[in-house]
Each structure stands twice: as C-alpha cells, then as structure tokens.
Amino acid sequence: MNLQRGIDKMKELEKYRYDKSVYTVAIGKCGVCYLCIDECPENAIEEKEPVKIDYNKCTRCLRCVEICPTGVMQIID
Image: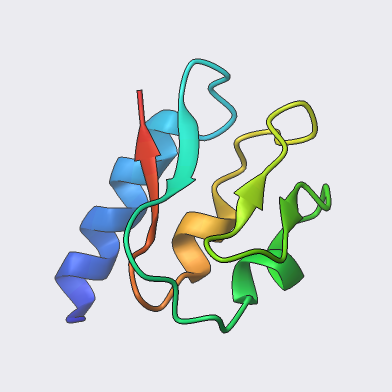
C-alpha cells in the first residue's frame, strides 16, 4: 500500500470511528493471523473462522479494520 492510499484509508475510517450505526465484519477468507483479536481493546473478537465479533462489546474503534493485513475486516453501514 502506498503512503497516499494509507492516508486516504485513515481519513475514511475516521468518519466512522465510534459510530454505533456501523458494523465491522469479516468479509472473505481470513488469513488467520488474528492480529485483530490482539488489537481489540474490548476483547470483542472471537477466534473463529471467520472471526466473530460481539457487537455488545464492540465500541467501533476500528482498530481491527486498520490492522487487518488482508482487508477482510471491513465496515458496513
């Protein structure tokens, strides 16, 4: 990912951060690195294939979307 695309992604994520009207979901084939689980401050992600998100715990901080190297973790509204 080039620098400009990375900056654009961060700006896009900022629009949705902590917005309870959006959801993060695992779309596609997870690379099973589980970086999202390690990054989640609320322990809202379970180690499954694909990962399972507990939306009662999830604060929509979007750290999982930022850290996912495969782009499987995405935002839907």
